[in-house]
Image 1 (cartoon, rainbow, N blue to C red):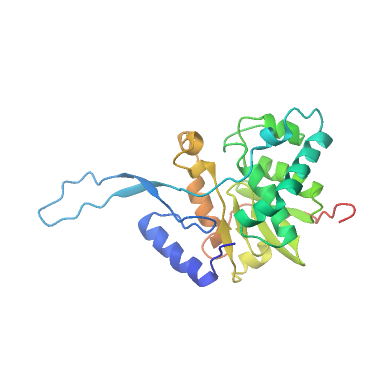
Image 2: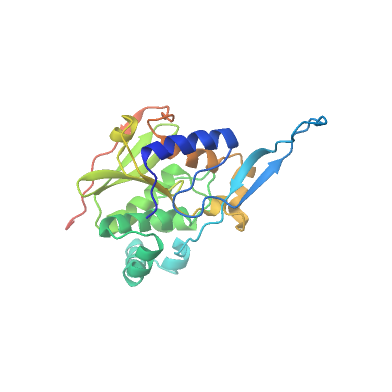
Length: 262
């Protein structure tokens, strides 16, 4: 797994802020930008500087099908989760190589995060009551991504908790070797610590994984922008949690959930 340390985060974040670029950790940095040139007419010695509005990515991925494709015509939640577990078991080694991850629980948590993230574009929606309902919806937001991800993490036997900043953002954290780690299915971003450590400014590693929302070749790459959302901005902020990003809203830390037999 390609990871970037705390010093690099701050340096790259400063560069990103100056250039309007996204820092990527789970794949190639970036390949293309949609830019609009300055409207001012340059003088004889002036340099025309483009104002970057969107940075699209060319990342390898997503390495897994969507939830709809995996669960097929499952008629109930049990059958849907059985399909998801069977897919993971069959493809475990391939996914470990693609995501550069050898830790068995972190690999499971990445699977739950990534398969959830790629399955629906970001947008307004109603809250689902089941994984099947989530997979059938047109859009998802942070709360519903987290809900679906939680069902998969539970089925995989992971210990997890939900973190929410009311009115701002929510994500899932998974216990890895006695340490909470952030697995944000909304932005497909992993951080090496939990919310308490991140807000305290602790050193961290992070990785971005494939997102169709910023894929220049994906038809949904532009959709969430036309709906008034900015995935690029939230994706950039997550690694800077407790550094320059302090989510507003009441903080709610959910109780740890330990599945039976875990």
